[in-house]
Length: 194
Image (cartoon, rainbow, N blue to C red; front, side, top):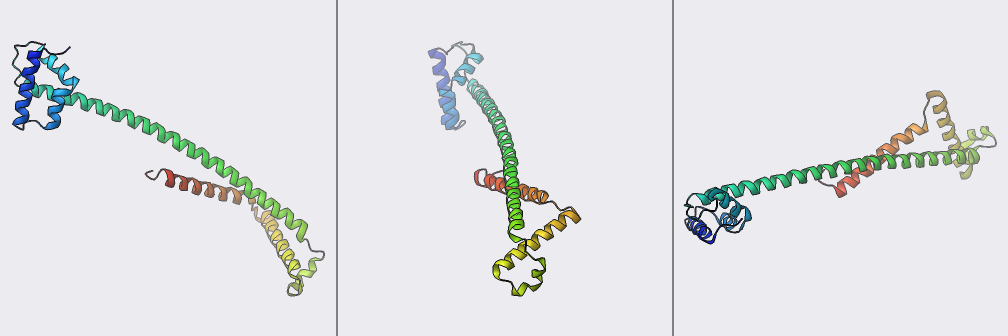
């Protein structure tokens, strides 16, 4: 429903008067003249009667229109906040999954490297005569390297057997720290506000 031409002209005249007296600002004036909500509220207040005095009505229309648009804006903000919250939750879930996958990949990579080192050390380092390690300063470089690798293998084996040191636990800790570090770097790069 639109107001009649006569009612609309009275309304515009009153809005112009308030604007010229600086009782309402430019934005309020534009809202009064151009918004559909203002027209709708004018019709509700006057019931479309051309003989109604519009003095005071303009302020009511303005107040009502502002309240309507404020409520709309608040509703949009709430919807946006819910959407943002949902997106944040999904990003957090993705990052937790990424952390878990990275941790697993790093864990198995570390174990594989250790396994290759230990197997290589066993194959390549067992000296023909363990007693030759006593003359370490006389050994050629390749024999010295083989001897040191063999001693490392012996130390790791002793630590495992005597103290229960497990390379898998060390690899797990290293992989967890590494994956958290990598994900934190990704967060800092792409989500600096979190």
